[in-house]
Picture (cartoon, rainbow, N blue to C red):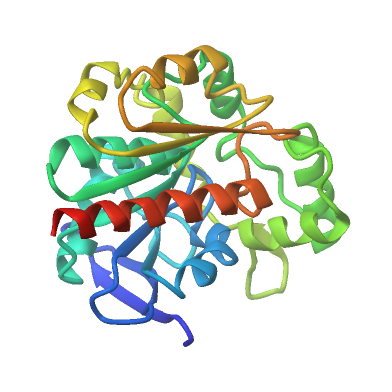
Length: 290
């Protein structure tokens, strides 16, 4: 079944976009997919249809990205506002419980939502993110977020992304690079590709410490929520030490993805298998409780 577009208005009047995969039944469990800082929901264009054979899947473009409206006040590009938007999205769809797959920023949103709304989040896949972020990676992100130079063509866009992220995905094929770029860029009216995110998104990161919240104080409150923590082997955001500390919490499964930095693409066979197994385990737990 083809995915459906879903539009809603935020509390402050922005028109926001999501893609809904209906799943096998109207009562199938819900999976919410949350993308990274300068990305959009198209990062899940392979994973979401795969999951939709068993789950209802919701894939939003967070405000300022993809097909969602850009915010005239860049100070709203912060986690509390993103979470308010997402909670409004779920409420509008009548979703009371969801598992969340969150890449980077999306994982931070997942942890905060789970702490703010007990009972809402049934499980979390945290893709290369945790309660503590490596300062080196944060400084790298502060340096590039919203500062991408203009390009004139798709080949230039691909070359640009490969220059910046070649070490993150060292074995990506030519086709893989093109797919990645076409997810993160969109052609304007003149057919010229542009990063599909408001360049002002990076400004709050440079002006505040909001990019690197310390979430260890709430990590204990999430003790009963199952977590699959995925780390890129060469990540500069989720350190091996932080991942090891996360494992001390009950119900945490981990996966380290070889030849990946920040962040794994979630199309790697090991990631897909781990996500499938994790989500199936959540369904089994619910069934046993019922």
